[in-house]
Length: 311
Image 1 (cartoon, one colour):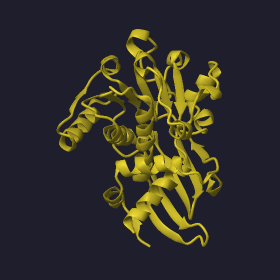
Image 2 (cartoon, rainbow, N blue to C red):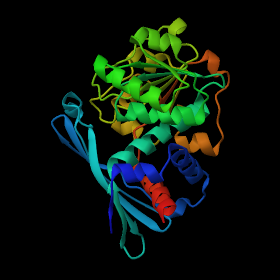
Image 3 (cartoon, rainbow, N blue to C red):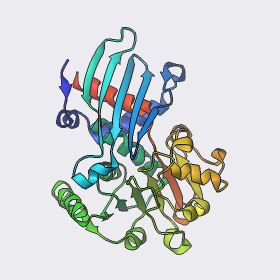
Image 4 (cartoon, helix red, strand yellow):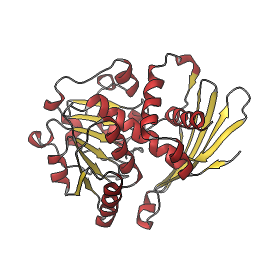
């Protein structure tokens, strides 16, 4: 059994296919055929190790990932890991691959589905806070689900924003893309993606004139001590939805939202958004938040699509 590198994974799996696979998974009614235990977190200082098993149809998968936020200062990816896919009945290994592109693709796809269902029909301007791997995957997913015309980016390290822009201009020459400050990013964008590992909020505070008609897609906070979205926005958002139930217990953003009085029952999961074909009424008049933390089952669905496409 060969090990599939990041390059090979990306050659055989597109963002469009990943989005389609996750959406079709939620339209599949084989609920009894799914097992996705809560992922195991082991924290080691600022670093986090994640073990994520899952079962679906004829497959079993495990993903072992290390997240090292400090790697950004070393110009290294913050996520490393491996993913294995097995035959569910015999437990024979079928595929072993680099977990980073799987994580990147499925996280981008989840955010893209949030954009598809929750952003206004006229949303054509995208803002990205954090220009690392997840910032890039959300550029890809936004382009897959929306007719994005302009992109505004912000990174604390100016050179990283410039590198992101250079890469985007080479791959998507039709796009207008520029680095701006946070205030302008929010003013000019219809959809704002936060893709950082910050422990303190990265967005401007609530202001109705500034935030009306925006969709925030928060993807960076996956630990209780991480928070990208200010308390004032969590208090004043018209709607808050999540990719999976785990967001309520894993993400500092959603833990804070609950502390501030937000009820779980007022939020839909991605499964509910898709199965109910839910689209907000008059999103142009609302501030909507979509919080994504991921789940092992999304990794399995993604690596399953890779395996079936490759074979």
